[in-house]
Image (tube, rainbow, N blue to C red):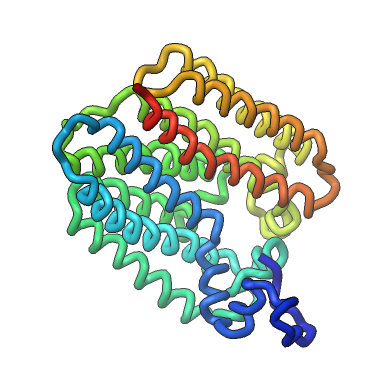
Length: 327
């Protein structure tokens, strides 16, 4: 997201983008969208959708109405989005000084939101996440409450696990990789009347995302090295250097795709041709895109980080589609 423009915006509708219109006419809503960290909102939404579709694919042959899944999906989506906003909002509240260096466009760092407004949003969304999950079943409770607990320990003093590279990475990939995938599948499977088992397809997706989010966790600090160094936040980038972390993240992502390609040859419950072909193409795209990044240009590194998130988003579309195309 770009910062608010200091120049007078054009009034000509032909030249006004949708983002600029929202920014001008609904500044609070635009600031709230930035506060929610859109890439995490998209990731959470797609994970809910993807796990719901996998549960539906596993339940084929039952007499359960598709509308049961729709209502369960909507309930889980609202609950998980509230939890998402709580976690990223709390992190911003504790990182205002750092964000003024690394991410000055964020609402608290730029002054669009006061700390009181930030705390109000965080407390409301956190409370909603806990209450709504309690109304929908024990698996969603386990998923949301555990995620909120880890997210709190990640950002909030005196624990503030983000100060320690290994613990910070562990927090991110344990929630995104393990807790979300297993918890949401079990929740949807329960709503559809299935048993409490986890099929091989879900374990494969969980392992892929678990390793993939480790790459995200270590890569995300490359663009933020200036602020992290200034405020003594120890990261792998500061310890090892940007080039080493970049190569490590690319290696981890490569192993993810090679692992899923290999799994396509023996994993039951998926369309093997679609799974292998789609992941082979994404692996080639990853390497082609990575070779064009100038690590000395912060903007290029940031764009490649967003590209990695897009690959993450795609997985929650491609893998469920491979399950739905099976048999």
